[in-house]
Image (cartoon, rainbow, N blue to C red; front, side):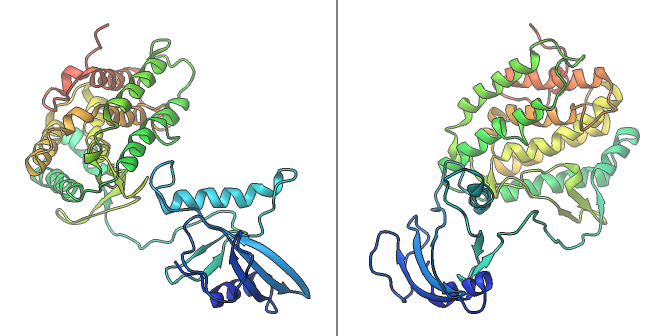
Length: 365
């Protein structure tokens, strides 16, 4: 990206006042400031700005983060997080260089300030429809209709289509697997929210589960060919159906790319969850929807490997629905049954979607 003099001066005037005037720019370490544009900015080379404002001559260093894969800097939002944090904290450490402002470049290269931001927001279009979880509540009590089967199939087909878009980025895939285990929104973060000694679990059980999930991270980390387009939080509260099988999705999370198993388990966990609440088993219409979802997805993708990598993603989603925080009204036997599934799946070499009820049984010691 070229750093244009006119854009820098316009930014300084918004920040410092209309009398601000750019005197010169130079790559840090270069002793010859210039009033010309700086070429190749944004690849890790800070630029020294010299300017006048309010009758004073001032200087500042303009820097951004180098775009790279790995080290938790894969996404624009990762780099924004780091820079906003630096702006908010540099001034709190004695002898640390102070941050003057934080901001962003728009697609045309113009600079905008967000240095006084306290919270960010998003404004979205309004979507008509009804959340898919209402369907599951009805199926739990009344069984599945033809429309329910059609909706499960169209959701499964949708995932098959977006997952067909692949990305070659080993570092990003490893990050996805790492985040599934260690991120505050995922396995370790959810487990940290559990009470110290849940009555439906044995002492030390959560610690044991977490260690097994770490083992799964090392089993999956090199399957980098699986990185694909993903939703990231594809559960029934984030799907809105209108008439028939017409739907929209909401609240895409945790990046554009991920592991297909994350989306599959985010949805199919809920077929199990609703059925277990009624009978501690997967049966009836919800069993039909669960098996149809998997059969259709596997038929369309041929991704049998999915069944070899799915365990830690099921573990994560089961931890969520069994959580006393997120679902405080569940009985202890429902929570215990969900954890039976979680642990049995973690112990299996390959998941068999036709034998869910065997996973719901008490684990063998």
